[in-house]
Image (tube, rainbow, N blue to C red; front, side, top):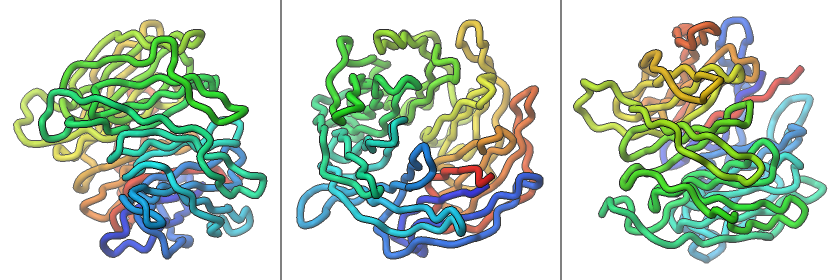
Length: 356
């Protein structure tokens, strides 16, 4: 298996790093890197594993107040990345992107300016100018973090029909009908799902059954379980649970969330408490039962990933410059360190593919 690591290049990092993952031990071995990039913090890979796309998390591109997205081809012999082109994201500070299931469009969330866009993928993998763009408007109760919109992620439902953009600044998940033929985003009939004031929605993940979805909130450190109506693209809140232990008194902010391939567990990262919280999922109701907290053995676990086989969880500790591999207990969901730690400068996002 291959692991592609997005980073911030403001320190020692040179760009996107590529590692081989040993499927028996969970050890990471450095393979290559793509350099000359500006803050390729978040990554996405197309369904055919031919191309990789990276945000350029900046506030200015080509002399305009916007960020960008870069395209790379993946060499299937060496698995190295070759730069193709860069296109404007039409908004500042792009922090998240996803490739739709047809492999024809990249959807982008611009955090700083609070907008989302769709960029077409051309036949050669290069990006074209945006075909769809939506600017969010509004604010919420936190005077420091919620004065305006801050789109923090954009995720498509498994049917590729609806796009869900968690907006930290609005305390809403904005819901769009996605036109996968023309790359357009149109507000859904029910255009958003509102969460508690001050929650700060960040990342969002679907259950493999498509019956449920899970949201992690950065500001109030909670996880929300939703029932999902895939016919109408509607969310109904089922339950809110804490991401931090009751006795934790320090400062911490949630970051990432992933549902295990089995559909039995959901995981969330805590920056400050520096842990992964684990909840079991009742597959008949979608509701959550607390399992454990596992320290990430590093500082500021920005993002993490579960390998394609569901065997390992890799935690990217941004501020301690390392990636730590944990083994997943398939019965309980608990994590156990494999003892494998890879030194990687400012790791932010991990994307994995199987090579055989």
